[in-house]
Image 1 (tube, rainbow, N blue to C red):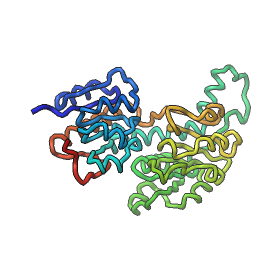
Image 2: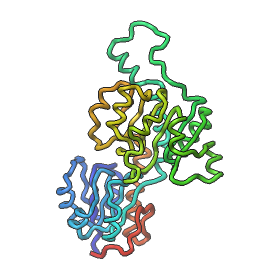
Image 3: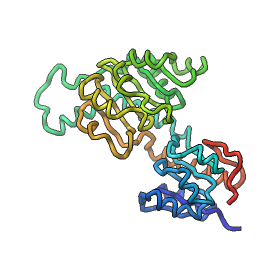
Image 4: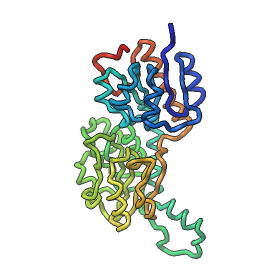
Length: 329
């Protein structure tokens, strides 16, 4: 019996490709070529499964061009690159990689908060440019983290991790907003209090966004929401591009309506809104919140585990949809 055929759409750890090759006929992409949608569809035409990294769009047109495709395993916790409705209707399973990146991403979210509040990159640019010639009492004076109010929008696993770091490590007053309220036990563990979004924006010294991207969460933070924040507040986005209206944020930063922002994700990434590149009071990173070697390897292995479990009959380990009937082509 022939092995299922798998496409690995981007370069990944060689040892994970070797592991997949023990179970499948694998077409990999070691040179990390960025395929167009048409090229991706052509390569998937004879494949039973795909290993994706979150940047490949899986929609109805691609599914129609890949009649054998039964599963797409995303090496990411987010899956807004999936048209979940189209996949489910066509009987294509989708999976993601939750949990294994929670603590690493929470670490990064808090690091980005600290860098933003304490103006680390802004001051480094100043120093590298040779502008440091004297001391001033207010030179790059930022805002305190300890004892301040931390507002978290999106209180899933990563949001809870950030809340615990703030409350237990820095004595922060933690408030949060979420689609559903946490249990009293989880609120106690996080030392967090539920509030409405507008109250959070009005009262938080530091606002951290950790919610998933959906059509309903598009521009959760726009001009109106930024206007509610205090002039000394910071905004941190480690969620997804599109959660924030980047154009409106650039205006708010330029006009100092808020103090600063830290962004790891962007609308239309890897393209960044040009106005964000012209304001000094923003920390910019290229979507690296989960980027440690152990965590990225764990993510790759979980995506591989999903493919292996699916094809050996156990079923996906971390499904994002539940097709009523799987594809038989």
